[in-house]
Length: 293
Picture 1 (cartoon, rainbow, N blue to C red):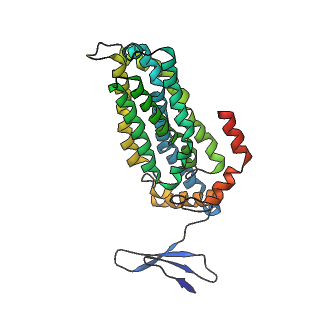
Picture 2: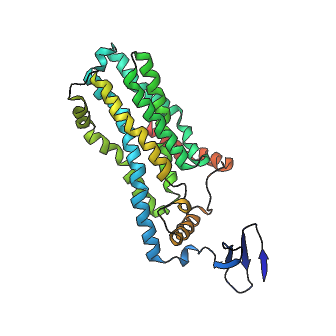
Picture 3: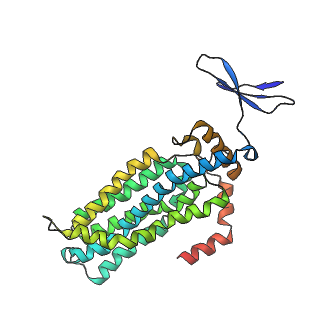
């Protein structure tokens, strides 16, 4: 029997036995434990439990953040109705530019989605959410069209860094045939936000605040987004192994699922430039991009 030693963990491979993992316990002794199972060895009931927990904890969180993104980007129309146009002395062309500048930065900075590959997801997501929430809130304090243009530009930068990377994040946790439904649920947050954005804005601006109603709108809808950045920081797991809502047994199963999906357990921390070049050479990606524009 041969033994491969590391500092704290030894992988023992026998000639006829299955691989086992030996882990040092609290007394410094080495205890043998089964190695992580392959996907074919996973108990279907445990896998079902893992998938259900992922559905309860991850999809609602990323969808809620995306819903806030759409509320924050689209509330400028409700702010216009609430008096922003008169207070900032905007004409039709000036207002149109406030809408356009967002999408200029949104398209130009699409490459920022690569941050999901380099930075731990909980940090990247929290940073994106905090940035666009801060921008949305600060809109309540501006007094000129130029300042609003700058804020709308930076909001586009922050939001493009979040949304397009979520399907990549979900692929850490779900198999290929499971991913479509979860990505669809995530994307459905956008039209859901549009169904009640107007009613919400009406409720916020229907009172008699001591300052402009449109400023109240930006303030009330921006502050919750900043608070949700903390939720993303503490509750969005970077990988199945770091999901606090999974038991140790469930983490082993989730890890095996991840290896089957991507061929590797770790997918954060480095960029594979060869794969990136292959992606840029893929005609399907360019066709999709042109259609979106």
